[in-house]
Image (cartoon, rainbow, N blue to C red; front, side, top):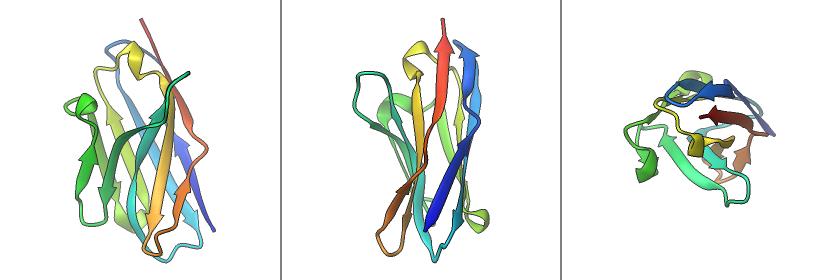
Length: 116
């Protein structure tokens, strides 16, 4: 069993920055991919960015240039640096981790609120 714990969310003014962290723990054999999705009120959960153990990044075009994903493989930790935040970035941000067995695990989410 794998547990994912997100941290770093909160309330920030438009134009500000936040750094989210997600650490995986438990019974882990090999994590292949880690990343982030988000879900705003009344909307579907959408991709933010993912990164493989080899450093290959897949990210949403609407967030490129403002959000940056990074990973510390040895510690099974993934980060999301968010800059120039906008009110439309307000959402619950969820961490994910996919193992070599193809099992995928999700965190409980962290709230990001951007005020005008």
